[in-house]
Each structure stands twice: as structure tokens, then as C-alpha cells.
Amino acid sequence: KTSSTIMITLHQCLQQSEILISILIGLSCLVSVVVARTTAHSDNNIIGDASRKVLNWSLPLAASTVVAATRLLDGNYEPTTKLPNKDKSMTYRQDRGITKLVSLLPELQSKFQEKGKKTLKKFTMAQVAEKCTVEEIWIIIDGRVYDITEYIDKHPGGSIVLKCMGGKDCTDVFANYHQARIYKNMLPPFLIGEVTNMPVYPHVEDFREVGQELLRRGLFETSPYYYRKLYTWLASLFLTSLYLSLRCTSTTAHMMGALAMGAFWQQFAGVGHDLGHSSISHNFYTDHYIGSLIGCMFMGISTAWWKRTHNTHHVVCNSIDGDPDIQHLPIMAVNPKILEKPYWSTYHDRLMVMDRLAKFFVSYQHIIFFPLMMVARFNLYAQSWILIFSTHCKIYNRTIEAGACAFFLTWLLSLALCMNTWAESVAWVMLSHAVGGLLHIQIVISHWAMDIYHGSAYNGPDDEWYKMQLKTTMNVDCYEWMDFFHIGLQFQIEHHLFPMLPRHNLREARKLTKAVCRKHNIDYHEPSFFTALQETVDTLVVTAAKARAGEKDVPNILIDGLNAEG
Image 1: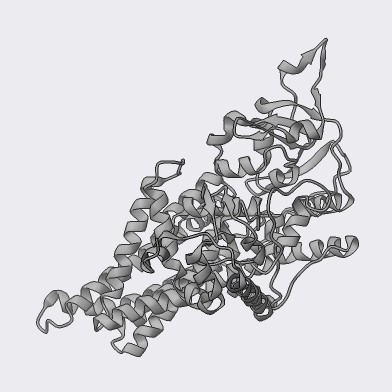
Image 2: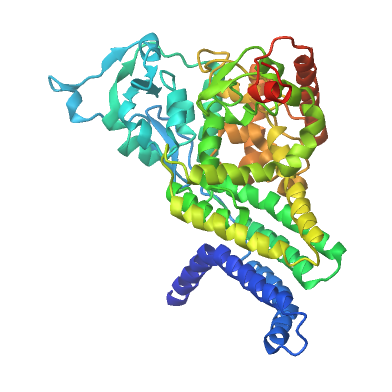
């Protein structure tokens, strides 16, 4: 029994520290290699000789160590299943990834006591819908009304998402973003009443049953073996890039190293995405901390910025006014509807207009699309630093992210400057980022060719939560063995419906989701990768043609100045 306890404890420690071990190995290799490269021209330099010996052995040894350690911890993981729930007053919810059967409605606080009975004030849907401004925001969850006005600026997911959902039925979006403890501990103080006329549509009931089935089967549990193998794959890509970029001397090998680094960034983004949705440890603060430290160190992109943008995108997916992922004027307009009229971006807090500068870029956006994707990563670096230095919003782990992003720039530039010439260094940076740009293509094809809309959604049976995710999102059809390449983005429909579901269980969720869509005749769009890419480019072409044909545009002071007008 004692030896068994020791082995379990050792297993848990190794599981938690594995990614840190990989980091230390990679950094130690980088340091030794840089020293070796910088002293390589000193024939009688003792330090140089020692460094070259370390260089010859460190990378292969590190790679072998990572692979061997992972193989020793390999195994099968069986999720914990539950019995079907037949009690309508109870429901399955997850807490730290573990499924629990809990009361559907939190217990009422004593302030609702009236003549020995607990009563709630009655409201209609129309009354709640009026409370949608920053001065007063109400939301509906499971038929109960909550006044969250005082909590807006304290919300860990950002204030923007709450403002977007003000006056709405948030039952499903709340359930898919929060754990059981939030219902029990945080909701009750904000309770003010209940609605008397909230409809539940047949397809909504079926989608909720899908969520309950996923919970019952324990599919919100994260498989440690899946991520152990994934860490091995990432470590292999990173170490391969270091070996080719630093150990080898030919330009060809260095460019192959840049390719490997770009592939590493594309693949590591999947882990960052999982951390951002708290779908690895299922602890908001743990996953956020790991993302802020490890993600920024290896990716150079702020987790806080990503979460602020991505949370908003999920809640108002493809909203012209609210979704930052489709607000790219003056460079791009992803759909002809964007050109119809100027709009106020609730995310960027500014007016978006089709001025002369925007008209010029948008008219040729289908031509510059792929070049832009190749350098889009540089924009993410800039956006990350802008948020880190900003003071207008709350940022978790600001200091950690600043230090980690600075560390990323340090090792990236050090690595690039180890090339043979300045031109080779520039080529290494540009090629690695161009390959990493594949990630941006994978992201945009999931939404840009789908439906977009002005105004506010979640108003009725045709634009409630589940249908809006299916209208604005597409999957990418691929073989199961290609799942690693798409890093979970091939199941964007299921991810938007159940964002905290670990990616290794999304394929199973796909089966259940497609069945509901067939039953209710709801469109489920799932083309191949290249078909999805073609649909995206076709949409850009149509929008560009409309921009070129448009006569009305707002004057732009830059263009007017260049043409000496006015």
C-alpha cells in the first residue's frame, strides 16, 4: 500500500511538472547552443570547445529524455460515467472537470422569506429586456432574474460579454462557461426574481440533453495521457527547430529550422486555446496562470488579450457591432453586410467607417489575404503589448505576462541572430512567422464565410444561443488521424456549443450534435479544409467587388493629404 501511494504521488508530480521539465530542457539547450555559436570561431577557446561538446549531445539527449519519460507514463484513461438523471429538479454540471449531480436552481437566501415561505418577485421577458444598459443590467438563468450591475467590472471574463448579454436569457451560455460552484456560491446574492413567460424551444431541449449526456459520460474530464503525448510532440518540434537552426550550419538547414518553429507555434496555439477556455485543469486561475507564463514565454502573445478578445467573440459570434474577430477595417471587410453602413464597435469603442483608405484596401483584400495571414502574428505581438501597458481594463497576471513576453522576444531575437548573415536572420524570422500564419487561416475559415448580422442576437427561436452558433460557425471535415493538425479548430461548432469540453472529446460531441441538427432540420456546415478556404476567399472577392463598385465613402484625411485635396 505504501509503495502504491508513493507511485501515485510520483505520477501526479511528474504530470504537473512535465511541461516545466520540457521548458527547462529547451531553455538549457538554447543557452548552450547560443554560447557555442558565439564562440565557434575561437579555435583555442576552452569555453567554446566545451559548449560545442554540449551542443553535440544536448539536443539529441533532451529529445530522447522527453520521449522516454512520456512513454513511461503512457496508458489509457477511462472517464467516470454516471447513471441517467430522471429527476427534473436536478441536473449534471461539471466542477473542475468532474461531473456532479446538483440542484437545478440554487437555494433561495433568507431575504426572500415571506410569511414562512420563500417567494420571488415576478417579471416578464419584456421587463428584463429593458435592463440592458451599463446603468442597469439584468440577465436570466434557468428562469430566474439576476441583477449583475455591480459585478460588471469584476467579471473574470471581462465586462464586454456581460454588456452584450444584458436583458437576455443567458441559461445556455452561462451553463457552458461556468462550473457548478458558481451557481451555488456566486449567483444567489444577485437574485431578484423570476420570469413568468420564458419559452424553451424543442431544439433547445435536445441540445441541453446533449450537454447532459456529455456530462453523464464524463467527457468533460481531461485525459492526462492525451496532453502528455501532445507535450512530447511540441517538445520534439521545438527541439528540432533548435537543432536545425543552431547545430547545423547550412542555410537550408536553418530554413528547415524556421519551418519547424512555425509548426511549433501553430501547434502550441492549440494548447493556448485550451488553457484560455480552462479545459485542461478546469481551474480558471491555474489555466490562466500557465497561459500567462508558459504561453507568453513560447508564443509571445498575451493570454489576457486573447481571453478578452476571444470571450467576446464566443458570446457575440459574427456580430458586426460586437465581434472583434470580424472587425478589421480599414484593412479588410469579411462580408458585404459590413459595407452597408458605418457601425459602432462595442469592443473597440469607436466608429467603423468605409472611408477612402478602407475602400482601397478592401477592394483588393482577396489579393492581400494570404500575405496578411503570413505576417498576422506580428499584429498579435503589438496587440498584446498594447493591452499590457493599458490602464482602462483589469488584466490578470499583468507583470508575469510582461516579463514572459519580453523573455520571448529575447530568445527569439537571440535565435534569429545566430544565423550566418543578416539576410538569413531576416529570412528565418519571416519564414517561421509565415508558417505560423497557417493558424490564422484555420481560425478565419471557421467564421468568415458564415452568416453575420447587425444588432443584438438571442431574441427568439431563430436566433437563440444554439442556432446562432450553428449559423455563424462551420466545422472542417477531416480524417481522425488529422485531428492533431487542426488542433481542435476542425470542430468549431461543438467548441462553440460546449467551449469547456476538452478537445479530445469534441469528435464524440460532434456525433450527438449532428443527430439533433438532423432531427430539427438545422443546417450543419462541414466542408473540407480547402473547400472552406475557397468559400472564405469567395466571400472576400464578393465583398471586394462591392467595395470597388461603391460610390459613397467617408473622406479620409490621410488620402486627402496625399492628393493635396482641401
